[in-house]
Image 1 (cartoon, rainbow, N blue to C red):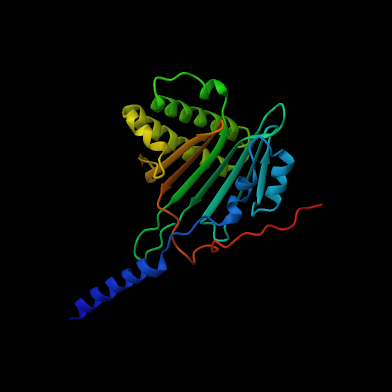
Image 2: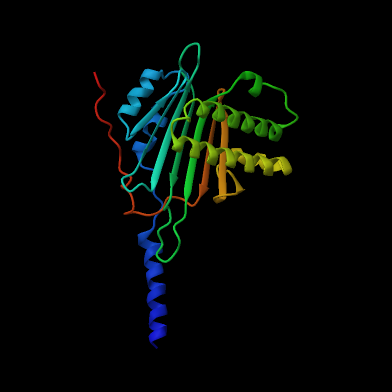
Length: 250
């Protein structure tokens, strides 16, 4: 009887956790602030630095054409990174990236915490890539993915020499692209799922599962990659509340 009661109590605990303790939460708005506010073809480096000033960023790394900023939550479980690249001639933003990782995205009792990571990017790609004649849409999507990987690697390399976090971000994102491209090269038909609302689910080497979405509009390509489990638990980090940045500096 005692054993049955213990089992019943355990099942009730798991039920309560499932119903109330662990819910899917959005990434807190302050982490996304710089990425959301930066407009490709419009924002200058001065604009981006001002957005960083109003965000939760703690550190900045900068080169002639790239600005990177990053921060972490109070407990050190969550880290995020923003990178913006600028055109060498008119100095407008032409590429932007956001990376987020949570070491304890899963908080169900008695289960090992699980990692989650997310990568978002928007890029103005060269017309030689977007306008090139391809055999079909699937081959075109794979070519665009390769170009995004190339551009990101080049941009992050300009600011990653002085910070370990940037190197970790580059490693995770590059591994995701390499794994996804390997699977797409083996089965090109899967590329058709990239532009669907649910995206394409692929096997991730370090995060078990990944979901990738990509679409193009007006010469701008947008991509989102979700790795591992969704951020899910309240109480571990600061709650996701509407973010009101401080007034702009005069």
